[in-house]
Length: 217
Image (cartoon, rainbow, N blue to C red; front, side):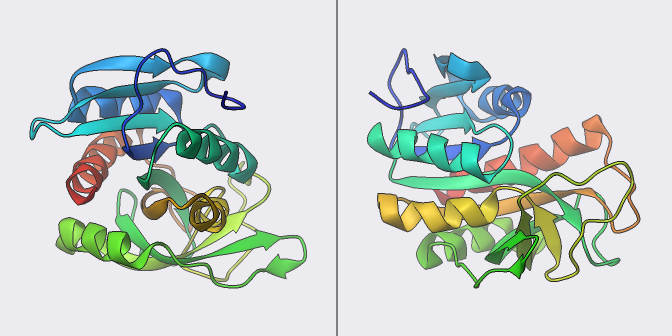
């Protein structure tokens, strides 16, 4: 039995991963026909159903931070997931990245108090397919995955990379061990000056990113 998820219905071999349970619900309603909740244990809402093209797809929340995301990915792999795309949010580290911008992750670095770790790449084939589906909607980026949450208007404690988040590096490390092909697209939810994307704008960006992710899987 998986360590964290307690599915009450089937989980598809392909999944979209989001941190926020509310966004998982929104994307499930956006991407699936008659989605069914397949997990509610620990507040990690997950939904399965068919896309309009007739493909089975799961949309699963992963919680906050790299450790939670890695455990959820492990559970999903145990349940049969073999391909997944993270649709997440990030903070811009470059002034040219505007709120709502989509970025396809070319590589990630785990960043802790001691500095940045080695570059970790997504699955090359899935990342290339995702980038092609995103087209001009997204730009490639390097993400620095922090081990602590920043906030309160303070800049992230890192200037390496294009954007910062809390999950992507952990997922990129874990996925090959689990034999899961994984890629990521992120939404700039906070710009380099600390301004935040409103909920409506975040929803629109997530819908665009989710549609591209579903098409790429």
